[in-house]
Length: 314
Image (cartoon, rainbow, N blue to C red; front, side, top):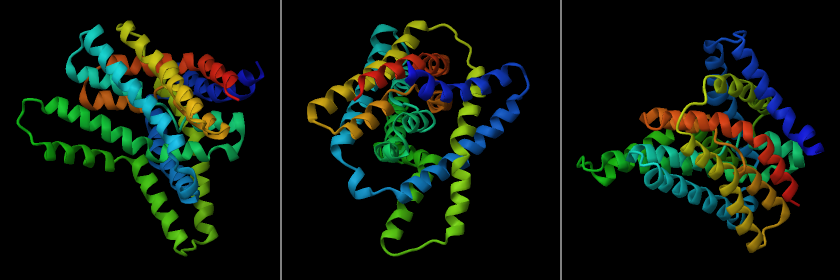
């Protein structure tokens, strides 16, 4: 019970505070949008830049950690895609958007603060290793899958579709932050030393990322009213909160992953879909209602599902 109140509730209280002030009209939609632009386009990329620049790339990028997480993620995608296609008879582009909702966990905005509160700041190395390829890999996969689905029968070449997908991924601020941070990491290994004032400024912006994003997330969630398609939404919630972390746990335990890696992989997988799931659906105009409502419902349910996973983990 202490894990619920001491680890999970404080994070969701910030989300709930943002939801409450948006609901009461104290924090207007334009203010929420401005805050999220700052958080997602500037503060969060800066946080990723700082974390990637300081990460021990040689130690943390290990297949025993990454493979269970991404096998679970892609399994969750294809379960969601197949369910949308064969159980709910959704159009092809809707199936990809629903699959992406099952695929993309909120690894940064929810995963990092909960992991830090549960196991301390020294436990985050595995999370950062997963996050380093999370957005680049999953966005590339999702956009490519969607572009091929959309281009089916249009005569577009494979190369042109792939180029369009890669261009879209490389323009996202989070990916830019990750790539810039890894570049800085390599340069520092080669002997570059940045002045303390530079890192002080970086850390000041980075420190604002998580509280601003969590508060803004609450304001964004207020817009997502629970609506129809409850079968598809329930499937997405189950894939995100149970199937993905369950597969990760089973593979990691079987392969003998150490406790620190197991915690990072499972807790990152156990997060609800983030706002990016809705943004992806909105970008293509596919399954927007399912994605939006899943983000809201799964985030609320995850208060209890995360508690369950914390109790299971060593």
